[in-house]
Length: 298
Image 1 (tube, one colour):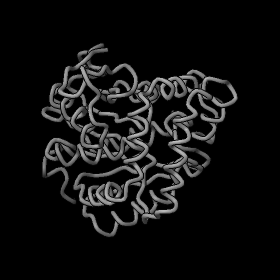
Image 2: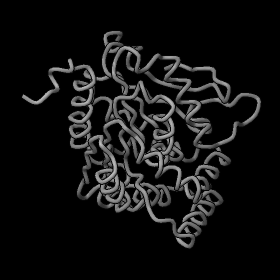
Image 3: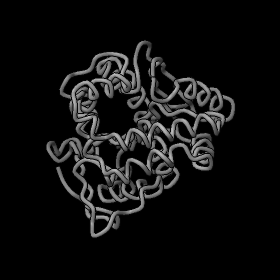
């Protein structure tokens, strides 16, 4: 548990190598959170990935335990990527061992931006539940109205029935009650300006177009994961992303649709999700450090 002073904030992060120095030489995985979430919800997945990977989580500005400086920073994809880049640089991730980026929901937008900044140091990118779509002004206006209404009525989520509805919207299967409580706590603690800004830019036409362009120009291997019953972001967008990358990109793309899961597959089926992610990350870590001759067909 540490803080990193950056130009934007005092960034809270956790690095499993702090508790076990042997992990410093392992492939590192940098997890990038979704909207109004702190890094805490990755814990069960990280526990399942241990001890084969060095895992790093952080709280983006406006969320969790990260602290503002004198003034709030701009809440943008570029700004959140600045925080992640500062952390990766401070920890020297990707310099002596493979670096894997894992983005969830809005965090996928940050992960794609970060990849293009750190390209030579990134071995793979994982995108969870954040596909690509044809822009629909009407649909986006409805979604933006929903986000604004949710923020205006945030106080209602202090009551148990609304908390249950909030978690049910994000999941299709029961999750550990501790993490159901944590998700609500994170939402209630998230800075209102940060939550509103993220909700708005996640629906911006130009930002969505740039996200699509960035995804289709990632040269590293990519793992796509989505729950078939995602009620937050339609899972069809991940299928579209897979089809476009398969047609346009030379680098391999693996796609797993988890039946009966929602927007938080890493909490709804910890073991199943961890196994799929572990297989992908392990394969890319080996490929990254294998001698050229060992990768040639026999």
